[in-house]
Length: 241
Image (cartoon, rainbow, N blue to C red; front, side, top):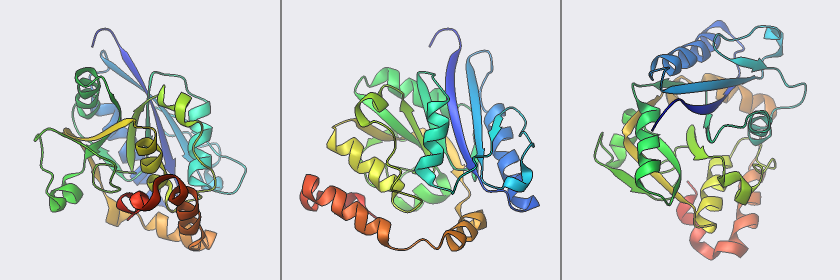
C-alpha cells in the first residue's frame, strides 16, 4: 500500500443514556488510534438514533440524526450514499479497534485478488468457535463465524453488483442477507484472524431497548426464507443462525 488509503466507516449508534454515548465515543477513539494516520485515513459517519442529542457531533466524525424510523439497513444506506472511498466498513458502535486492524484486512485484499469482503476477529467471540489470532484467513459465509455482522469491511465495487442494502431488514437478519448475497454472487468473503476488532456484545443493552421499542417480530426471518429459498434451496440455512 502506497500513499494514504481512505476507508469510510459507518457506525450506527443509539445513545439514549450516558453509558451508551460513552460506548460510541470509545469506539471512535479506538478507531482513530488504531492506525498510522499518515497511511490510513478514516472518514467516519455516525448515524445516531437518539434525537435528543441532535446537534452533538462525535469527535472525528460527521454525526447525522435521520428524521425517520430506524432501520438497520436503511440507516447504513444513508451513510453509504454519502461516502465514496474505495473501501467501506459497516460497524456497530459496541466495538474496540486494535492496532493495525485495517492494515491487516487491506493486506488480505492485496494478497487474494478474489477477496471482496472481510470481517476481523473478535477473540471473545471467535475463539469459542475455534478461530484463533493470526492463524490465517478463513473464507466462508457462515453468519457469526466468517461473517461478523458487527464489522463488515468491503470493497465499494461490491455495491455495483449487490445494489443497496435491502431495507426490508429493519434489524434481524441483515447480516444473514449480506452473507447470502455474497455467496449467491460468488463474491469472496473471509474472516481475517490477524485483524482484531473486539465486539463487546454483552454490553449492547441499547440493542435490546431498540428492539423492544420497535416491537420487531419474526417477520424478518420469514422474509429471509422467502427471499432466499427459491434462489439457494436449502443452502441458505447454512448461513442463517
